[in-house]
Image 1 (cartoon, one colour):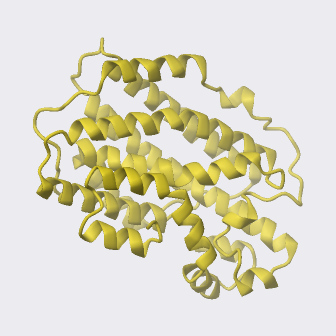
Image 2 (cartoon, rainbow, N blue to C red; image 1 turned 90 degrees about the vertical axis):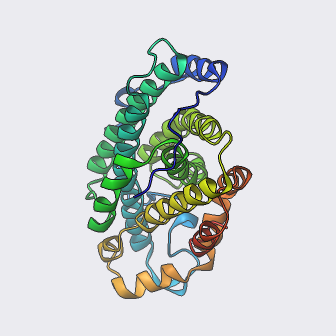
Length: 301
């Protein structure tokens, strides 16, 4: 896999980094005390807003019983959390590598370590939520796991932070809906709220790092980086919902996978969730050529 960052690493504005660091000091959460882990699980409440289910709006969804819908959304939510944990571990390694041998007195350095600490808490929070709901950790495919070994080891600059931004932004709108939806389990609403608040700083940091890395970048480099980021997006989106979630709800897996793949409602929800992301990547010159075709196929454009 080809890296795309320039040898001399550009630095982000210290004013921005300091502001993010101050925000983390005043607006951070401890999931061990913020989440009511002992609250009973109402059998009628979903794991995610029904409209965000991969099958919502399909004839198959219409045939499902209310119990099947609850089961499916709970398993879909945990599938997303499993993939989230996987990518958060990738993110931590990339950020730590970007900070290696950096000036520790800079706010950029301190916020980078703060982000890693946040992600550690988030991963534990999601793991505990899955444990509380009694749903297995589905995780990404073996192919995705192996491909990511190269990405997390070699990607730098805009290629690293672009992948980070994709993972964070695609889930942001989704979780904003979940945290406000009374039909969703309280444990999911609270964990979503914590994640949304703290990830907003991470997204700002990733955008600033990308802009700094791309200063003076050639059109050819932007094309290469944009293509790599789009490939990463394809892997992330393709692993959000594990096929086994359909079996857990008593559905025929092959039928359900086909229905989800051709579901125009879910495609529209994905486009809505990625609108700001696509706008930013386009402004950075990272949505040209192959990248645009990949995003269109993923329903992100």
